[in-house]
Structure formats: C-alpha cells, structure tokens
Image (cartoon, rainbow, N blue to C red; front, side):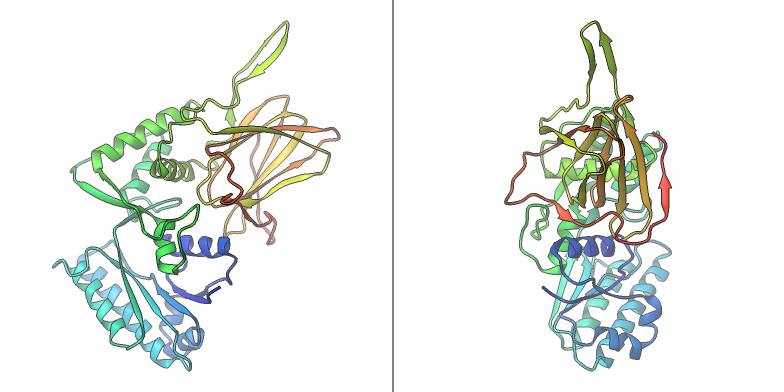
Length: 374
C-alpha cells in the first residue's frame, strides 16, 4: 500500500489513477494542483515523505510554443517543490510521451521535462505513453477515440480527414504502469496496445454505436472491444438511459427481450425483499445490465470521485434496461412493498478469483440528486 502524490489529478489520466487507487484500497492520493505548485514551500510540504510522486500535469493541445512552455513550467515548479520537501519522496514517476525528443516543440519539451526531473537525483521512472483512450475522455483533446465517441453519442458520424496508424492503450493500463501494481483482472501494466488505423477505428466505433442504439449488445471479442465499448457508453450516460425494451403479450402471458447480445456472457435473476439494497460497488471493465421484471425499484449511480448521484425509478410494469457505466458506483433498492424480481446480464462469466467488483457505497458523500424519469 503506497502513499502517492499526483500532479494533474483532475485530468483524464489523473482521474483514472485515482479510480485505480480507490479499487486497490490505498489512501487517496495527495493532489498537487497548479496553485500548490506555484508555491514551492507549500508543495514541498505536500510531497514530503510520499512513496511516489506521479507527475501527470501538462498540456496536450494549443499553440505549439504555449504547449511547450506550459509543460516546462509545470516540471520546473515540481522540481522546486521536490527540493523544498523536508523528506524527499522515494520515487518520481513521469507520464512522458512516445513523442519525447521527436523534434517538435511538444516532443522536445517533454524530453526536457524528463531531464529536469532526472537532475533532482531522485529515482525516476520515465514512462513514455502512447495514445491513451478510455472512459470520460475529453473530445477533441485527449484522443480521437473520445472525439469519435462523442460525435456518435450525439447522433453524428465521425469524419476522418487523414488516415494513419495509431497505437492505443487503455488509460487504466497506463495508470497501473504508473502506480506500479502487477497485472490484475481489470488492468495490465504491460500496456497492451491496439494498433489500428484512424479510419478503421471510426468504422469500428460506428458499428458498435449502430448496434447499441437498437438496445442490443455488440460483439465483444477481446479486451479492447470491451474497453472501446465502455468508452462509448461513458459518452452516452445518463442521457441515453433507460433503454426501452420490447414487450409482447398473448393468451399465455407476456415476454420481454431483456438482453440481445452478439457475444454471449452470463445472465442471472435475483429476488429482493422490500427495502433491500443490492450493489454498492463499481467495476473497472465489466459490462452489466439491470432489468426489473416485477415490483418497483430505484437504480442509483455515482461516478467515482464525484458527488452527483443519478437515480432511475424503474418498475416491472414497464420494463426498461439500465446499463451500468464502468467506474460508476451503483446500487439497486426495492422501493415497493412486495418482492422485487430483477434480471442481470454481464459480458463475462463470474470469476471469484478476479471479480472486478470494488465495494463503495453510492451515498458515500452528501450528493446532489439528479433524478431521471423512467
């Protein structure tokens, strides 16, 4: 269990590091923001004695000279803070780029940042990261994946102006590499990359979106399929939910098609007594669907590290599907006075040795309520 300090903790990579740390059960990282870094003495107090400083802060987009200057400034401020710490951190980890030293203002600045950190004499892990993708990426900033997913979630079609090959790594794998944890069921610090052309990527995501718009689950052939799908779903939530389901009735009774999956998975059913709560956990990779078939319930979700809670009132009289986004804490409570019957589907067979289920209550903090009509 390590004590971490993180610059850029509120950014795309920083949030995923914090989610992973939450899943590991480690202490919440010390956040060292722009204001703290501007005061070396105060920042040094925050960094004093930590096991690892993860330097994630920096700029990816903007005018080339501004981006270069911003990255160098952040690294210089961190160096001053490291030298001001009473007890030097045991290790510094730099989220560098594979573009470091490539002759561009950005690439040369990233290489210079690594040298500044190395000159402190502290043990340094200079981790050169490729293109990262994952849940809640910022469109037109973090990656083409985020941009394409946002366009598709808004009902548009991605535009490809120049095709080229990309090496894509899921951000949780990068977080595991930076934090220094061994491979787990939901992450791989070896950072397995998906090599894909931009046009192929757009087509792949478009096909996923087209299938999912019907309420069906797309074919999830490998871990990158799952993670690309989860990334797309993060741009759909909560506006696209609940998903209406087809209900058919005849003299025999009624039939509701709850899950139409192109790739298999596991389906199970549960009953819950009045006021019983199920869930109170989050997943890093698992795809999961809830459908109430009898009774009434409320499904509540909160993004890890955030306070706002999204609540869906659901009933078996009008079955709908709510798919749990990854890295959102969720629960299901029986709000009625009779037994609740709920069907669950997940894309993978349950493995008790690697369940990808990380306990945390939805109402861990005083939240802002965001009610969503069924």
